[in-house]
Amino acid sequence: MKNLALDKWRNGEASTGAWSNLPDIHIAETLCRMPIDWICFDLQHGLMDYSDLLRLLPAVCGLPVTPLVRVAANQPDQIGRALDAGAHGVIVPMVNSAGDALAAARACRYPPLGCRSCGPMRDAMLEGFEYLATANGEIACIAMIETEEGLANVKDIAATPGIDGLFVGPMDLCYGLGIAPGDFASPRFKDGVARILAACRSNGIAAGMFGYSAEMAASSFEQGFDFASAGTDISFLRTGAEQAIATARKGLAGAPDEESKQSVY
View 1 (cartoon, rainbow, N blue to C red):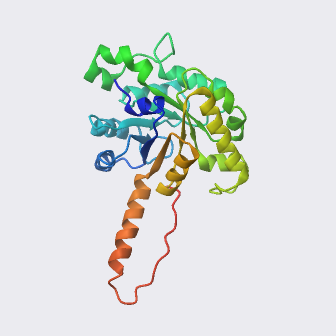
View 2 (cartoon, rainbow, N blue to C red; view 1 turned 180 degrees about the vertical axis):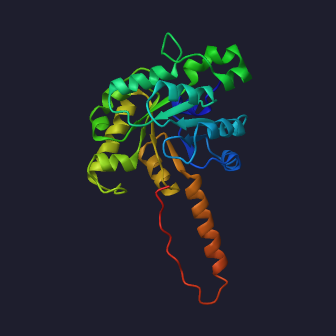
View 3 (tube, rainbow, N blue to C red; view 1 turned 120 degrees about the horizontal axis):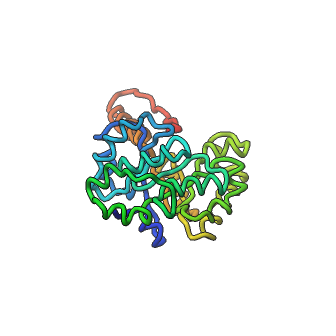
């Protein structure tokens, strides 16, 4: 196997992604035909389950986009099943310590580097033993930093063998730091983000940000992040619909201008 997004991160290149919350293969395939480098299927907060994942991953197979999965929890069985279904990496929530990070990294790798059980149903069908020979070096293990405890331990988490990157969960990080949700201009939030970036740079791993919008993703890249989501399938649908409807309504006499409200997803 070849992880195109991981290759970019290792070469110091930035990558743009999309977040998938809806269990629809047509939406997923449409997103993967856009100029993105990766897509993340969300099993933690997305409106999908494992059976949906078994349809979504094959739908984007063969497209030049790296499929990632945010697992619901840092559990070996959940990580293993996502990888067995064809994910080329996992984003692991609530990683609060080096021990949490090591558990996630080991769940992604076959022995002797880890404890992943061998049963890669999807990729072994396509690649056979070649997958087993390359998987340990190509699977991406991304740890989410989204709590005060995780931020306090960020240097140790970033230095954990097998961790390929850190990913900021901005809304939960706000909660964890006692900041109003969405107050990304807060000095405490900015300081936390700077510490995460510094930990990534010190250890030569990628720094990622959950972007709620294209503007937030652009700002993240300007700060030095290596990867960020430009939005979610839901936000793309909402934004596109708002723009199209607003344009159409310009032809109606007396139609009021309606202010757009930013959605969390």
